[in-house]
Length: 154
Image 1 (cartoon, rainbow, N blue to C red):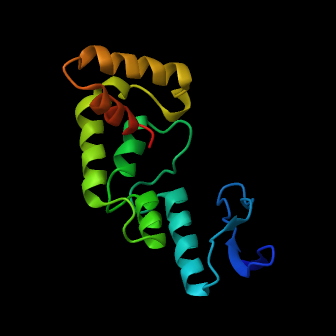
Image 2 (spheres, helix red, strand yellow):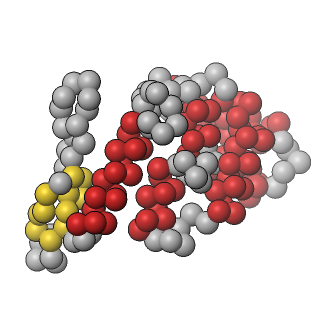
């Protein structure tokens, strides 16, 4: 944790995370705050997101199953992304939005991507998934299909 100037706009805290396996540090990331207590909180959340020690013994990487990652992402009590957003803005990512998107994912998208890993996702695969959603759930409105599809990568 260290302080850097912000182009005449005050000073912000930055942090770096150490990879326990290789021993290398990440690039410096801004906490966008000048409060030391807030900066420590943000750095801890980033470290928790990176290691996922609270939810599993392995970290997220390219070989992580899409279902594992998305299930964690939409769990409002465990998702480091949602927790971090709420730390910056308590009104960000409301519970009803996270619950709706998680429900869309589980109901419509999960069966289509159960065999995929994060490394397998690319524009062509995403386009195939979107076409499959439109074909399989033709009774849904286009706006609903778009919301369902966004549950995969929002």
